[in-house]
Amino acid sequence: MTKIIGLTGGIGSGKSTVAKEFFSKGIPVYYADDEAKIIMETAEVQDLLKTTFGSAVFDGAQLNKQKLAQLVFSNSALLEQLNAIVHPRVQEHFKGWLAFHSNHPIVIKEAAILFESGRAADCDYVIAVEAEESERIRRVMHRDNTTKEQVLQRMQHQWTDEMRASKSDFIIQNTSLASLPNQVKSILEWVQKSE
Image 1 (cartoon, rainbow, N blue to C red):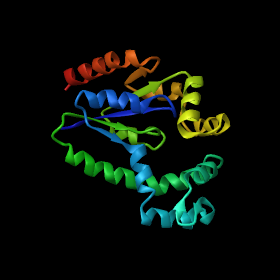
Image 2: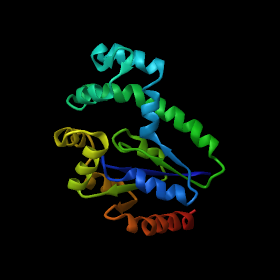
Image 3: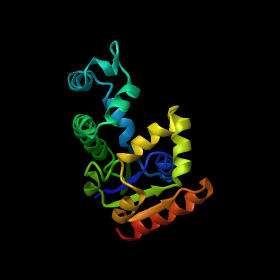
Image 4: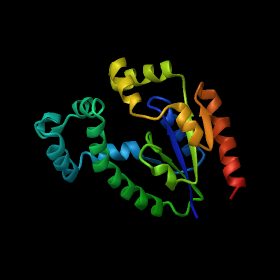
């Protein structure tokens, strides 16, 4: 039976960097957030988005993700509506991916809102990645070409580090790239021993 390790953390905490470290050790990684972006480009979901949020979040036929983000991150009810459209489809896709990787003893499911979406319950273990808030804000501003206010707004819709830590099996402190390999190695060793 394949063990599913959930990998989560606040925006800009470095989940993808940690995921790459697991991948370098031969562990398949499912990127739920990337998959959600792909699903949002499908005709079926675009039709639902247009019906739910109107043509204001589109530039012609093209979904404007920045406009959609501004809309949903300033309104919790709209964010819930978006999640209700996207999350079940991501979960369905993950099931197929998991079946394809069923010959692997361990897989990683990387998802920013693993707890918020209720999907942590599907995992055998959960790792929370933590980093200094100021560093997280800096990373996201640089990565997404966005403002500090917009990053803080997104953070408000995610669990705090303390909330994630209280429900996680492991914590990875992403303070330096050099510290990640050993933290990942020790988690893998622990999981492999407990099989």
